[in-house]
Image (tube, rainbow, N blue to C red; front, side, top):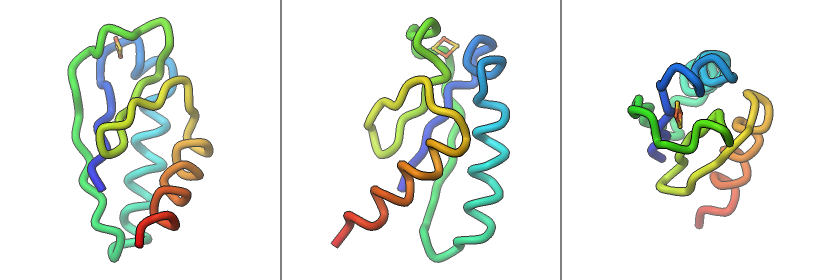
Length: 79
Ligand code: FES
């Protein structure tokens, strides 16, 4: 699963710093999940941020708890 976090200043300040921390912790506790974290430049959706992409799906305005929850949903729906 590839997770791209917008590391632009707006998204970082709006919550992606905390999202990154939560994802790093989650990935370290679930090594079997094959999570790849990547940073991204500003996605030009600043006002809707923080923005992340999970396997290409743009997710906007989610905090750490919501991101982890969405991640679990996607993992559970995989065959
Ligand atoms: S800083 Fe993230 S969309 Fe602009």
